[in-house]
Image (cartoon, rainbow, N blue to C red):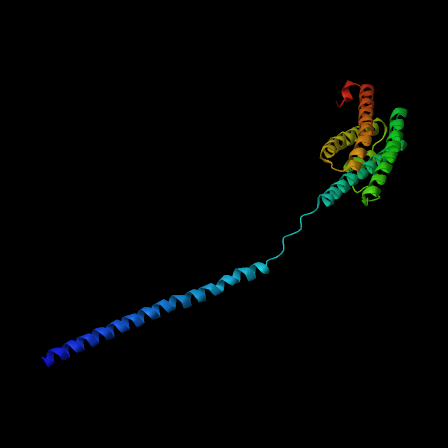
Amino acid sequence: MRIHENLRATRLFLIAALVAAALSGCSTKREQPDANAAAAAQPSAQPTAAEAKAKPARAVPSAEASTRKTSASVLAQIHQANLKEIALGQIAEEKASTDEVRAYAVQLVNDHTSADQMVLVTAQKTGTHLRSAATTRSKTDQKLRSASGAQFDRLFLEQTSTDHKKLMSELQQEREDASDDNIESLIDKIMPILQQHHDLAQILLKKEQALAGPSQNHG
């Protein structure tokens, strides 16, 4: 009887020991996730530090600065065109073979000199610095200096006609895109002058071609 009681007591003790061990294991497992969670929470602060070191965004150019840059480009374009036509006109004043072509050359110099004064005034208003001399010299300039007589007249008129047509086309586009009242006003004043010069050059070219005869008509 005592033997049975002792065995029973031994079993109960073993069962109690196993239960205690199981409970102890569960308690340890519950604590570990908490530690891991705390460790995982620490890196979350890193992105914030990285964001603090991020480079500042580039400043976007103001509309005023963009307009000023565009205005300066248009003024430089017209200024250089004026200087070129003045130079061509001065050559033609000396080398033209007819009074009509010479008179046209004089008008070219006078009108583009006046037009350039308007450009300079506008440049002063907008704070634009312009170069004081033409920056381009074409092969046509060299041909003009070496030509004479009717050949010179034809080359001169063809060049000025082409120059004015090209400039008018460019300024027409600039006028449509312009956001500066000063530039718009300047183009409006210069366009009629350019048109007149182009038309006169075409008229004189036709007269030169008629005098030269069909065999020398270059169209």
